[in-house]
Amino acid sequence: MTIDVNTVPLDPEAMLTGLKRWVELESPTYDKPSVDRMTAMAAEDMEAMGFNVEVIPGPEGLGDCAKASFPHPKAGEPGVLIMGHLDTVHPLGTLEKLPFRREGNICWGPGICDMKGGNYAAISAIKALAEMGVETPLPVHVLLTSDEEIGTPGTRALIEAEAAKHKYILVPEPAWGRNTVVTGRYAIARYHLTAMGRPSHAGAALKAGQSAVKMMARQLLAIEDMTDDDCTFSVSVVHGGQWVNCVPTICRAECLSMAKRQKDLDRGTERILAFDKREADGTGFFVEKSVVRPVWEASAGTMDLFERAKRIAGTIGFPLANASEGGGSDGNFTGAMGLPTLDGLGVVGADVHTLNEHIEVDSLASRGRLIAGLLAELGA
Image (cartoon, rainbow, N blue to C red; front, side, top):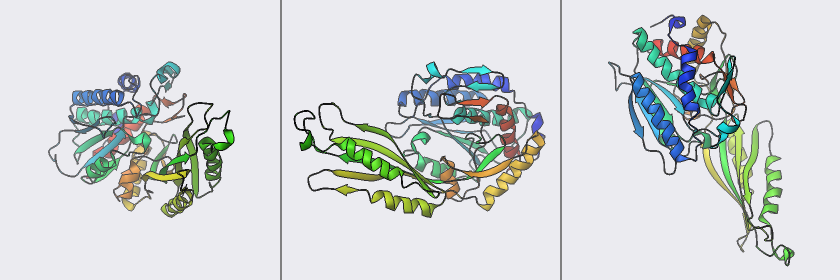
């Protein structure tokens, strides 16, 4: 079914009022109670919009997830899955430095762009179609998860299992450009780094010890210097030592590696694992591979989704381009599964993961209408 998407009843002012509640409920990944409250709020709002909602207990130590479906005559058949995450990178208390505020068409707040704004626009689009009396050709489902910002270690299996039930996957992650969507993403791997030194009194017997912090500093520089055009390495989240008068025994860090092609990421994995050196006395430098996002290269099905979106965007009044992007998302998993996946459908904004994270308010409606247009015709 083709509809005039410009008539979809989405009011950015009303949408922003609803979104404000989501943004002001901070939900950093590692704070389970906060993420649970955010999931409960999203579930409550979706139920009020007419969705059937199931709250799914989160992975151990992580927040709950929500699975929702909109009533449909073909309920239970393969349809469209909209995927998003409710966790953010911003720690509790960020609202004091980055309060929800608006100036003209710009609105700030923690997680407003990545990706609470896109999630809210997507569910609002589904409700708006129902208000118009438009029945989507395929049933529409929503999956909101709790650990995307740390690489999806606990919910990947859930995502892949739910995605496998459907024909199309839409991901309202932020639009990385005003008129763009994402049709592929780079491969990403994370590593745990641990330097193990030898303790001693830093004042009385400095030379008897071996500093884990010093070891980490040297290896950190060597690892980051491996970055080239094909594969990057970035080390952060460094913790070492406890008392300044003790030579530090342990120093830990995390490394993020990203590559445009899977073979480049695999080559990078071989290079960083070569840093793993363990001595008989227990000292050394240990490298452990953590979560991985596979490379997602655009399939014919994904490009068909893009062409549909491009045509719909043109009727709304903006040209739409596509790109393969760095910065992983859960679309990596579904794209790598070969499922038609369109990512970056969310709101327009900038400076995500910073204290200047913001959106363009009118994009709540324009991006919502783009999603509505896709839902109205997919499967027809």
